[in-house]
Image 1: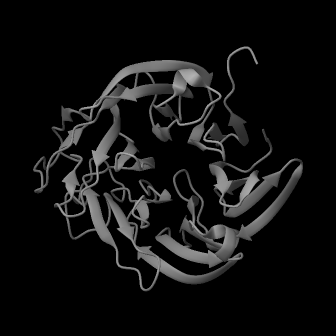
Image 2: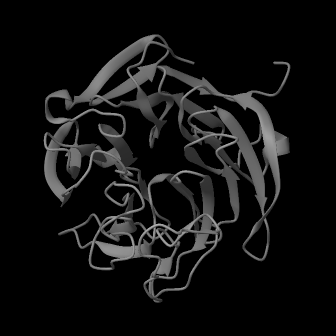
Image 3: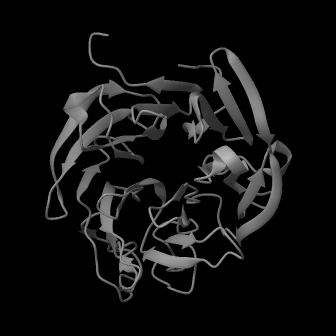
Length: 324
């Protein structure tokens, strides 16, 4: 659909603007694409540190964006720390979160509004092999967590899940109140998590750094904090890739063989898979799809729920039925 972009990390559609695509470029630009026209809506290049896992990493549109023009961005600032701020009609209006990052990797960065109207962010464990400071299992640390906050009034961040290593894209299934997460592994296993969000219960635990996928870690401290341990519903080894890219549950109409299936892929191999969520909360029928996207950095829906893919090599793709 488009080429010549500068390391896109996200692609999607804004409420009230169904005919255009919005793209994040890792060095700091928010770009709106409509046909052959490209407009830079927000340019943070002077405020963003760009590295292998740093840069402009996440965007979420306010549900009422069509009328209030508000959106939220997640980026690595000049020191490499995480910043999340609100923008209105292209101008920053306030900051919602600042988290110091001890290392330049494992920044997470994805933003999305949940079915409860709260803004969610996926935070990586802060870097370092095997989470040496045990941040993901420390409930008092915001690293290695899924966090959320209301956006009306003063932000008040709440820990929703603990035990994440580097969540690279998550998506909600509003019908079931679940979140699907692609969590990047250490040396061997990439995982997909499917979690029922229960805000009245203690945060559930996805197991890092005691577990990589379902495999027990022998390095460092393998103790788990409290919280129900949730096992991955799917995983693959580094024989098939090296860095998972989470996607979403397909609810479009043009690709009937994908109906109700969760799409995900791998940044390194470009492979795209789908699976079917099982009624009891697991997953079944993991299937490798025919599509392959080099340097796959994002999978998400367009205005009709059809798949869009971002490639850090500089292109945006859409999925079509084979033979078309």
